[in-house]
Image (cartoon, one colour):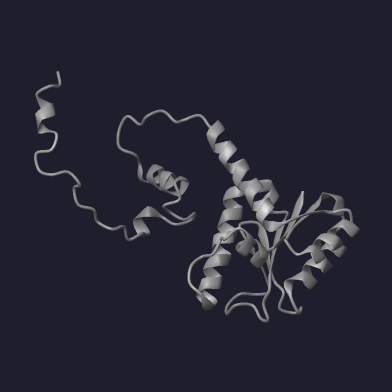
Length: 196
């Protein structure tokens, strides 16, 4: 199944705001969206996913068309808006019955339906993906309790799983805050004599 995603529409519909305003804020929001897609979609679906962003011109250093871990990323710089480019992509799709358009713009819903493609509002699609992710996580068997300290790659995997470390970053490259011992001196010493 192929996906065409109205990028900024999904960012706002799912509240995937990367923080801040201005160009850097938009850049962070785009990255949050792309990382969410990589973490949420099956690998074989990533290569059939296109995300389209509005842009009078691509951000500095970014071409109109690029790829991010299999996802095609397009900036609609030659169009008045992303909707025009998405309509063109819908029209050009060779198998529209297997196409899903993710946007809350009903102009795009009509364009998709004309070609017998599926259209879904951004917030609804996001909710369905999050629900699938939650169900998949709850069905995974819990790993055995580790018998010793975790290897660095295991720590990174858990930090990414828990959302404390973005995908692709390494724990050793992150400037973690130093924490003090939360327990007062002597805490738990009275328990030492009771063990045995």
